[in-house]
Amino acid sequence: MAMLAALMPLAAACSPDSRPTIRTVFVTPDIPPSARVACKASQPPESALSQRQVLTFWSRDRAEIATCDARRAAAVKSVEGTR
Image (cartoon, rainbow, N blue to C red; front, top):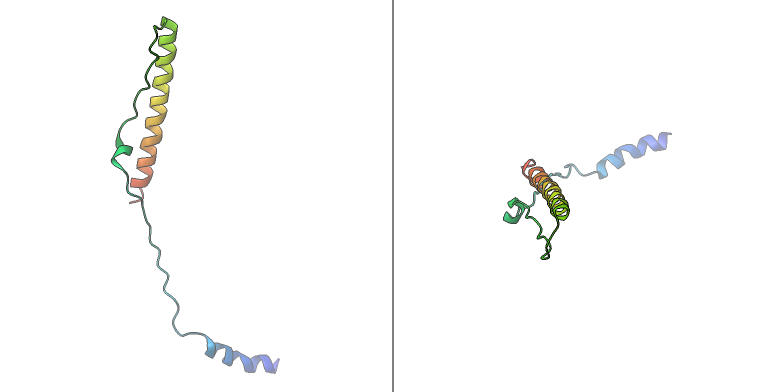
């Protein structure tokens, strides 16, 4: 036990006096202008469509645009919110 007590000052003398400086830097990506453009509608088939097909394609297109715009807006907001 006495040997351990004698080695403590020696171990303390080996430690550096100054502690390293740690710096945290938050880096946010640049948002390209294309990310701010609203999503576009898809093109319907070139053939003649029945009323049911028009309703189906229109409904699907509206749902895809709403989902796309919500995801795009959330992605832009998440990046801008950290600035």
